[in-house]
Length: 316
View 1 (tube, rainbow, N blue to C red):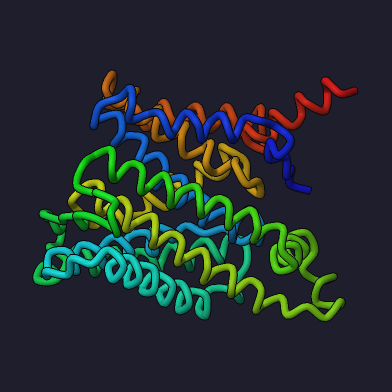
View 2: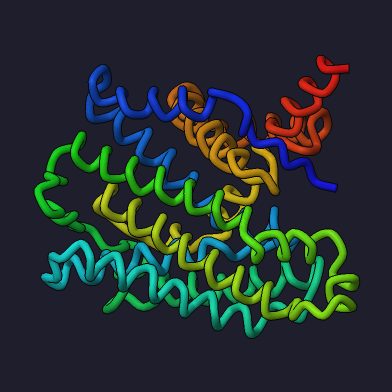
């Protein structure tokens, strides 16, 4: 059984949240931008964890939903649609619809076949983004994305204003994810992950549970893509690439699949190391790969699983 230790009886999550709150008080716009990227990719990883960690469905095409959300924001922003709510709603909705279509085409498959089908479908979208120059800008992407100036009385034009907006979204989504996992639907999804045949015998609509999880996961990935599009002011085909799909998969496994905070931790580690190591060497991807291999060998349940094992050993 996958480890589900989530620091729920620890003050660590509150300490991390407090640290995130005070970042703009001590750091400039560059560091704030890095932390915004961490939080956006953490949401991306949380979205994949819904189907991988809780549903037991691996995917190599999750960047498709992330990219769709980003491109929707890019097209609306550069077309004169300034409303944050309209951009956000459209990004999440289109990513959700994309996930719904993908789910219909993929969820009958399992294991390596599921991986290959999700990869192939995502590559189709990447190919469209890469070649449709008049709509997506092809490999030049879509520059000049301007995020909405404000939401209610919240000024988003400054780096700190947007930082706190992303932090608010990040906190709310994590809280809702925790409620989702604790709900009857979440518990049933965990049951499907552990023993799909038994859940079928008990009368649960297994395919429907998996499908709804896939749709929810896609919508959340689209939200993460929208946040990154606003942060970077640019969207390109890489947002839909297999590299992004593989990276978010590594984040989930590195932190601990099937845990609430594992994907968040994995995203923070990967993005943090990417920004630090890439400033030292161009071969930072190889170093990250080595770190991932070491964690897989010595902590197969991820970093959160390693903490759980240490805690259990200490208690005994």
